[in-house]
Image 1 (cartoon, helix red, strand yellow):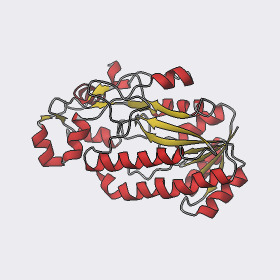
Image 2 (cartoon, rainbow, N blue to C red):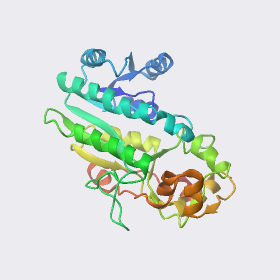
Image 3 (cartoon, rainbow, N blue to C red):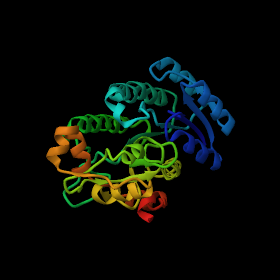
Image 4 (cartoon, rainbow, N blue to C red):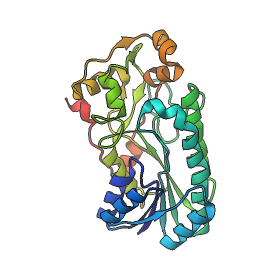
Length: 303
């Protein structure tokens, strides 16, 4: 199958290209980086350097690739979590405007299927339950969470608004593993090492993670699975009070501090409180059933 990957320089780009090639697909990766283009070529993929904001350029490279499927992994995220406020507007613009150019080019070029990166951790589920694929994004959450939820809501609405292409929304959990924030020496891990990520209140907000390689495997499986939405998360949705101390132990870090919601709200703001106390975990039952996917157990819960 001829597969076109936009955002081939992102966190999931490298393992996704590896998995696609392993399964025998012909792959073209779109990037803005000369160095990443060379890496793609060395992996065995073809590389194109293109600007997602240039609609004509995007359509030209897509037609040249003769793509049957487009995988949209366009993001603009920082290496450090603390820099997210500086990147948020640019990230949204890339996903909405750049991704808009990409999906319109895909439809114009006769692409059969479009896979869209979405989120499995900004979902709204009834209290005490896990979010499934019918669950909406929590657009009434704390400010930055609500803004991200709105972006993903728009992406999914755009994806399924056209009958001209098969849409697949990939609701990934928090990525962990090599070259992600949740890996020794990387952003989230460093924050935990410095005891700057506290358990907040009862820490009842439930997080769903997914290993970056498992996310790549599920994405490739979605090339041929039935269209629709898939929660791509592991089997271990965990409250912050469970996963955060376990992650600290995994890193050989000091135990995280315990602070009240009021203390954290005053120090770090409402968004940090939301992540710790309000997140809804997600169910992966559909992805396992339909795609035959078997994600690994969350690494730090093995200890």
